[in-house]
Image (tube, rainbow, N blue to C red; front, top):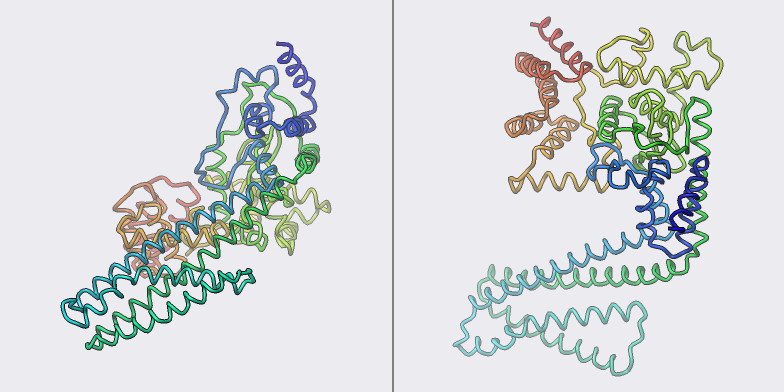
Length: 549
């Protein structure tokens, strides 16, 4: 009881010192050799939500969680972020990546061994069908045929030893003698196999059988390559374990403090400029961001401002992560850690808070400063000399553009509306692109994995509606319009959930000069009550098509 009261007093004394107290808590736990993940989870209400310490017991089992399969950017609470920082410093993520790769290579090895075994069975069946073991020549080669799997095994063992020698491994006299005997024995078996193949009189059958032997030989070489990779990964893991064991606690705690203090500085500076609070404890009943709404708003805005990730930074550092932090204020962006920082209580509303963060992201990676310079040349911004004032006006106008104008209400000046329409909105003739296919969202291995999954779905006739939707977007981007049309028709026969498929079918029909088909699809799209900006885009097509007719 004394211990509990002491802890409550300590937490209460930290009520005005959140960002200083949290890293101190973690440092204390690390120095005490506690299970840090368990410790952070235990104090999650405090760390993630800044809940008033005296009310921690009230909320322990009723806290918001982040959906495992987010439909937009990765979203983290402070506790998740801190675990990530610790994992980086302690090289935990590197070790887990190594283990994952080892498992993957081991599975490849297992599959390769099974494939080789199947080929050996196929080879035996083929030889059994060729030779009659009742005649003299057949009986003379029966022993050789039966020993072929053993020959393959010894051949693989010899490949391993030869590779070890080439890498400088020391072999004793007996080992060298054994290896020399194996080589000599394998050479003799190869001559016997050549003689066996020469006994096959039909040329096509002989070549086919010889090709089977060659494929098995190639499989053994592939096994060698995988074995070498497995050994290399195991060696790296052993070295990494030694490095991890030697990491001092002070290095971990120092990094956590550094990251937290950097975050505190950003939040303090930003909230002092635009208003808000950071690092203060709050009461349980105070409303915070709805995470599902955050997901949907991020997705919607990025689908509208689809070139937001068209920058060089994305290729090296990937998409930004969204970090939810205790406090009140607008969203902001930190390029050092590539994180969008979202105070859990927005200054005004969620949409404005997200817009502020996305403008900050855009400006941070606009190397030519084209966006801010171009915006400053609009009236009445030309009269404004303060860069900070121009930036604030851009955030305000951008928020109106992606939120209010998107909903069909004209609140921007004419020149601002034209500026956003020409520079940032999807253009007429462009397809709707879902978040997952926006430029920069999927690239490298993730994009390849998606394409492989789609191709397998088509081949096995197990393709899912979402994969079919993505396949149609890829086809649209490649201007393979007939293919995209076929894919969307199949999608629409499977699901009614993809209303923007109707819009894309309309655009495809326009490009293929099928005016009446386009009219039908755009009319269907509008009847489904899509977001007003997209409904207006479809209406523009309808007006143009009917005027042509």
